[in-house]
Length: 159
Image (cartoon, rainbow, N blue to C red; front, side, top):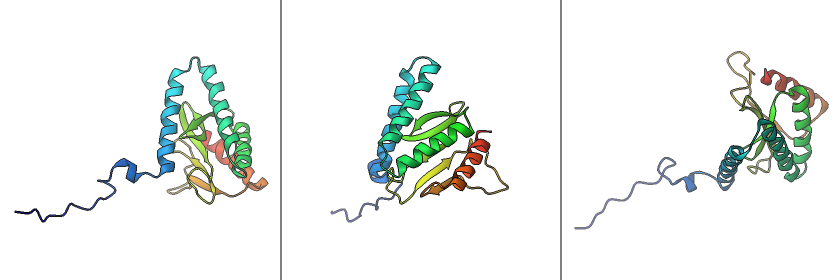
């Protein structure tokens, strides 16, 4: 007797992880694992802060133009608007944390092959405005007005 039942089609829930995530997403997860391992190996808090900022600046330097130029400017804006936020890598992206929790991050357009870069805010950011508010912003360039708005958002997010 021959089995005539066909296997159920694969869905996102039943597909292996390698089929559910893009190559870029798997790369970001690998970067995050490396970040966590590196963080566990570091010594004093001052050493961690200096190494984290150096890692962020190195990651920014690797970015292609115009993302690199935008990320450098955003780094300066965040440092000026909220000097208490600590730069660190988060899934291979420059991010800024308060008490070890990411508040905001920059995702280059190249990271996930998108047509624009993104400035994102986590749920730790205090951007609440009524019952609905933006948590990320698409960036194609930075004008002086954009820079002022970003500075105000970062200041508010840092609380």
